[in-house]
Length: 365
Ligand code: BGC
Image 1 (cartoon, rainbow, N blue to C red):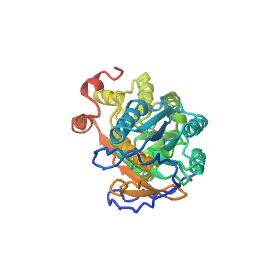
Image 2: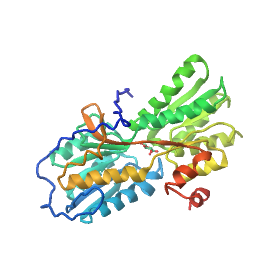
Image 3: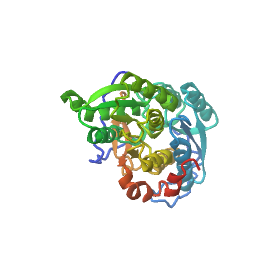
Image 4: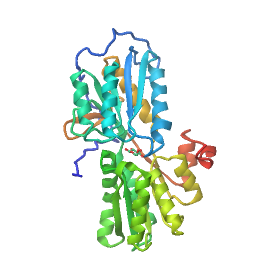
């Protein structure tokens, strides 16, 4: 896994970027069949198809329960004439490529893709561009490709929030375990880099020891369970803090800790503010999660997709910066992640309507 240099462009600075209208020809406009959405964007509508391609159903509940419905709802609101084709790749990048190809065969003129594999998906971008189809990299960057837009969060910041929590709550001299995301996901590399940025100087100073670290293939919790069991065996259960990259991995970590009577005694991080994660936070077995307002992310992607479908240049007020993906500075919408603990569940996820106390108390319902 070669480290990449990312310029997570000054998000706070809100550099307004002049996005060049990347006209790939006339392509997808079905004759300017504009219906004014009346939305704040003032975006018109166009008949046509947008494909939403999401990565899996096992690494996080967010894809099926948040991203998909939120995106579909927003497209419908912005452009009642647009059709959304949805596919989930079930963690296979070759399936995702086939899904992209078949979406284009079925008339999709804009692809919104969260890549299973950030590198492999470059092929999809090249194929799409040959056919005059635009590609929005959704949540995860498609690296080394001329992808048109990127919508995500400040992913290095996510890792920093997790790392800072561990730094602040692990006993001095203690041993840290890091259960990172999938190496094929560029976000996972950024989460990891952000966490190391905070923790490495402290490890160097001897404040903590890094006892074990592993990336988790496919972000699959069953792999994380194996990793955590292995970590505990190697460390004779001397684990004082666990940085788990998301709530699904945290669930596996907690299961392994529970088997050794350690659940609730060791700080454990997470991400996604899932109902299961928030439930564990209320129970005291998980310590924090990182809340990313998916409705805002899905809505920005829908806005971009609808504009591109209509052959319009997206508003510069929406596209707030750029992120270099190894090939180009990709015009980007980057949102801010928020650390959530027991003490601010009410003022964050509940207040925003992201979830409810009832769903947190009964996470599988
Ligand atoms: C997303 C996380 C998610 C993880 C596993 C990452 O790329 O940003 O929100 O938990 O993938 O699906």
